[in-house]
Image (cartoon, rainbow, N blue to C red; front, side, top):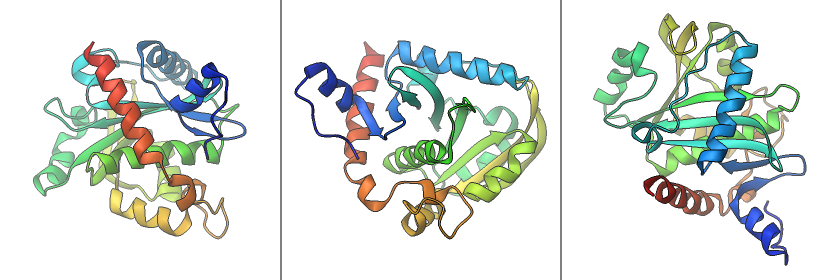
Length: 241
């Protein structure tokens, strides 16, 4: 998946900081303040375009220590972003509306996380980009022992998440003050995602109408957990400085 190391030190350094590189896009961690600000700008632009309010807390250390942000880019031009929030003493953003529902899973022994702040410029988005972002989010959850993932979405997007990733609605419609828009809570088990990835990953849409065929194949996944862990460790170290 990753190209051979270049003899040019600057190009080699750039290749080493990427999680994946495709012919038309790359995925990397937003592992410094400048990149996180770039994701924030994209979120604000995409949310404003849809009439949502944007509220970002990425530089609050209490929040940032338990979140990882991914970026889809072409060189330095960022056109997609997604954040995985891991549960902690501060909870999840979705607890503001749905703590009762999420606590049912916690009390049953689940280790929970959430996908949040997903924004993709429609001019550059594709199923391949979405598949790469969600597969890397799935890997991040596996590495942290997560069993159950939640996402708050606008009710009009529920059908997409049901059809493409098999999320199920577990929370009724409410108004999310963070974005000043209606929301519902969706849920999927990591074990289910792992099963679908093993069956369909890398098939690029053949035989199943969902996003899972656009996840990575077994061969494409090789080395990714080690790369994610190395970059996440570096990112945590930079946050502590």
